[in-house]
Image 1 (cartoon, helix red, strand yellow):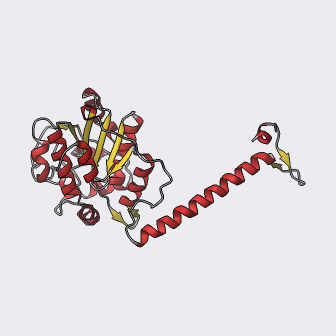
Image 2 (image 1 turned 60 degrees about the vertical axis):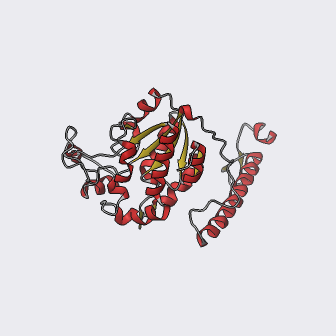
Length: 284
């Protein structure tokens, strides 16, 4: 590295073109070689996983293990979009998310998390997804936003009415209503695209002195990941529950696989439902 610091100009090749100083070139070459080696190892590991479970963790992880320890007095369970359109065979997205939901056991696992959180007395918050008639007036949208509006996903009659809500795609799954409607669960205002920037979830968590979050719900690479990224930027410590979520499987890609990769990279912890329930402190 001394050679890099002692050069204040670029070397020149025989043709007069500028080159990086020799020390820096060697350093970059070494870094590139290391990157290629790491990439090859990762590809080999990925190939091995693909032969079995494509979502399995690598046998030899490169990233440091999680050191997240829950303090229940400042912990909340946050569940995104626990709604019929995502989680029920009668929902409008079941054709693309149903296989993933069933494979992960998402509905049953969310039920276990709700039950454990209520037994432990920790804060529980829902970040729902609703669309009102005025939202159809948006002048531009991403591809998935266009699709959601086209199929009537999460549609409600209006902001000040519950007409037609019960049992609709925007309604909560029946299995979860005993937990959500117990008078203690926070139901935030709706988020509109994927993240919580447009609703009051962050305010509700701060007002309850929450700075640790157990995150689950739908869908993995969209609302769950967007909530994760926003909460991390806000300074919260977040564990994602990997089998209490799911995602669409489309020709454009497997959303769950994309999410699991990013959860490993950026979450403070990535737990199974079994691990999360034990850490919350009970059986569910």
